[in-house]
Length: 205
Image (cartoon, rainbow, N blue to C red; front, side):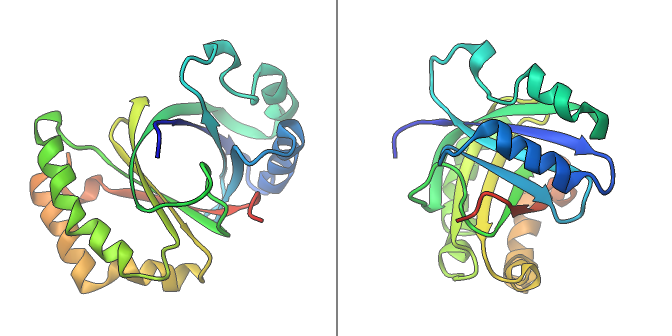
């Protein structure tokens, strides 16, 4: 797949206002396969993932501009957080640039630059192998932060199974051993440096 980028916009939302904010964002974006709107299953945030092209005017990089933010500002509990992710590779590729599965999980770690190439090689036979063998995981794409306040590796994982059944893939003894290995050698802050956030994909087909 040719190189592309994602813009991830996270809006921290007042409790109970998630659906309203998400609905307004979908209306502002219009119909397009180049974005998806995600509502946190833990509540408290709405995320928009947009495919962006290299060379785009930075001020026009997102349809979620100041006017859109102004419309939903009364329902927000904090400022808007954005990051740009660069596509690296996929363990399970999708025909779409943005996820179209019922659920999406964002999985983030930070790896020291001096260990990055070794980590990329290591994950082929560990993380990626588990994902390829697990039908619960429909899409699994690896990105790296280009511009972010939380730099590092971001996996965008798509699934449609019950979240508990999907999560069993990553809580199995086999995968927990992989997390332990990564924490001991690659993840800044050890295994606790892995964070995951799960969302309902409101743009799913």
